[in-house]
Amino acid sequence: MKTVVIVYRPDNIAKKNAVELAAWLKKKGIDVRSHPQQSIRPNIKKIHQASMKKTDLVIVLGGDGTYLHAVRMLGGEKAPILGVNMGSLGFLTETRKEDLYSAVTMTLEHRMEKRPRAMLEVKVQRDGKVISHATALNDVVIERGPFAQLISIAFYSEHHLAGEVKADGIVIASTTGSTAYNLAAGGPILHPDVRAIVVTPICPHSLTHRPIIFPDKQVLTFRLLNKEQRAFLAIDGQSGGDLHANDEVIISRAACDHYILRKPSQNYFDLLREKLKFGERS
Image (cartoon, rainbow, N blue to C red):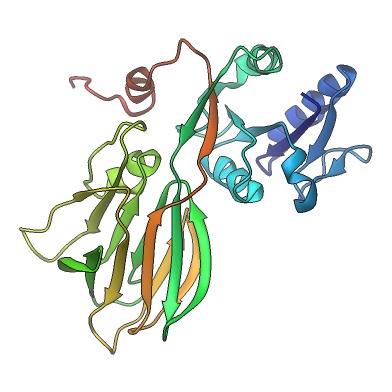
């Protein structure tokens, strides 16, 4: 590997680890770069978007929020990410801080598994024109924001009406994001190898609305039903702007996958038990 980018959580402990890791990598002759909006040391250059294609590896020191920040930085490029947990839950950053150097060594020796994760493509269309375009690793959320009233949303699969829901909002999650907001809203856990998108209402005002799993080859469209209402769009926890009554949110599987690095011995169900206490009896 020639070029490694380090992205760290903005706190003193994570930055200290970033400085030490950068020095360790440079001794091995590796070109170390930082996130465009971060600084590790004066002798560490910041990565630029034009150089992103040449990146061989991204190392994240932080939690899942920092990991998603690094995914946005990549902008669809195929460099894999090694996530080292310095946050709380750390479902994406599953490598323990104590195992940082052993995991990086295994990565440099090509002994880690590079596993693809499906991403979502998100388009907002207004009056027939696309006004925003983004990708998400975890989820897309349409929510009522600070307004007290519920919002009414219709959603379509391949232009066929799939349902209408009155709720605080709706979560559209990838398999990776199924263990995030989707799970908290009562949605199912999807194994990352499943080719699916799950749609889960947030606090629906009905006993009949339940999460729905769609094949990820289908295009899903979401519209507000009430012309007087407004809603807000969040993409992987970041603001995606306001939504008006005539807007369409169009979601499909992205053409590019994301690549996550894991030890060959790691198992998804072990991760569920470790992080979420899945299957444990109280």
